[in-house]
Picture 1 (spheres, rainbow, N blue to C red):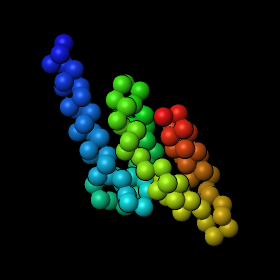
Picture 2 (cartoon, rainbow, N blue to C red):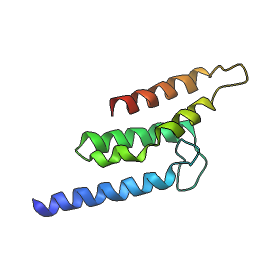
Picture 3 (cartoon, rainbow, N blue to C red):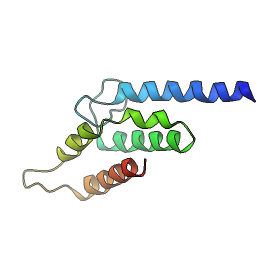
Length: 101
């Protein structure tokens, strides 16, 4: 079983490193390393982080830069400071995912 446990943590580290490369310096996550962030890929990344964390890999939570994430979510507002329904709902899920962590 010990070999399986090492493989588990090795895989988690690879996923963590990949997600770190996908996180934009301005907040949010792109679909791949160094790509522009998007709401859908940010939502997927946050769920992947939550899954890793829920399975005992607490270092996964270190990936998210909370202040940059807030900035990214705030950029989704239009000139009247209103988010579209889709952006609001996904943003809310992202926020809740982070709060649960």
